[in-house]
Length: 130
Image: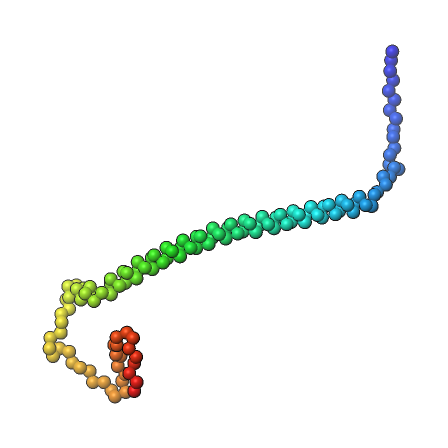
């Protein structure tokens, strides 16, 4: 037995699907709610990672500050050693060939009456009132 198939052209261009207005509103609400939740999640994640980044930066700065403090202490000790009067005296006598002045070698200066002299005082003493 032989079978025959016929092709029938169907034209659906005139069919219009009815739109449900509530369905579109519900879809818009769901999309906006999803967007709001995603925005909140992204904001939370950004703040979290920014906080972690700032903590790393703060630790780096603290480390640099402690290193600078140690270097400052070392430099203060070095300056104190370089300013020691005994060291200066040894350098003056040995390297520069300086000697103590002999009597009559140092002549006092005649100062004008309006001159102000610097005066060394022990720490904590108040200046003399005129």
